[in-house]
Figure 1: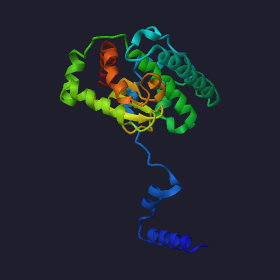
Figure 2 (figure 1 turned 90 degrees about the vertical axis):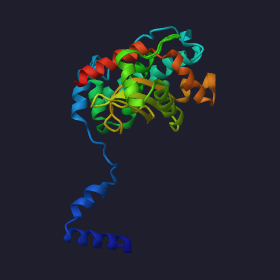
Figure 3 (figure 1 turned 120 degrees about the vertical axis):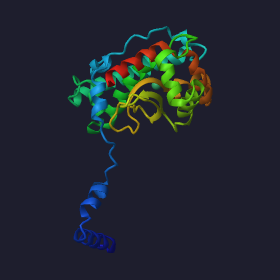
Figure 4 (figure 1 turned 45 degrees about the vertical axis):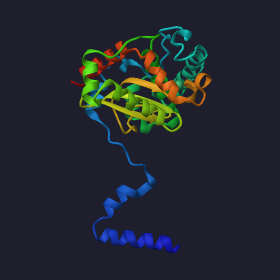
Amino acid sequence: MTTRQNSRRDFFKKASLSGIALFVSSRFSFGAKPSVPGNASLNQAISKLAEYQLTGQSKQNPLPYAYADLEPSVDAKTMEIHYSKHHAAYTKNMNEMSATANSGSKPLFQLFAEIEKYPVPLKNNAGGFYNHLLFWTIMAPNTGQAPEGNLLTAINDSFGSLDKFKELFGNAGKKQFGSGWAWLSVNETGKLVVSATPNQDNPLMSTTEVKGIPVLTLDVWEHAYYLQYQNRRPDYVDSFWKVVNWKEVSRRYEEALTAIK
Ligand code: MN3
């Protein structure tokens, strides 16, 4: 036995005698990552959402516009590859992996709520399936829209102004290191929160720190903008506001609030 192992053994012996062994072992044993607490009341609200019917055996919805319709914010070729290749691959992989993990008939949001129990590739592909499904709906051709009504009031209350919200959300996307997503979500108290996640993680997942029901999102993977913007992610993020479908964001906001009440 090495000196190090000896001193570790001695430490635990002493710790046990002094009554702190339980504390030490629960915090440091098994090399486990710190767990993110679950949120029963949020999960209860999530179970009331229309999209709760989605399972690990789902199809892509048809795009609600043509590939070229988001130009000049998002070019047609990017939209075509993004929808017909990337999103299609996440969908196919999720369906295959869900079948293997025996989770194919489980509501997707229930899977997200206990995602730490499943293999990371299933998490990545199920996240990729849902995040894009949401993303397509919250964009529309040159909307000229701005948030109104309850949503605008909530944005002003939470962030000070629409411009301050756009800056905060935009920075979440611009500063996300590597691939990921920016989010506007309704949290368990009904408050709006901005966050960013890496990879295909989302605020519905048990492993995500800032949890909530997402109502607006922006894909900042390079595949979402590189053909048109190359390294200029900030330009892509700024151009996104021209194609935000605020009517749909508002609908999702009201649905989330109703589910949480
Ligand atoms: Mn993408």
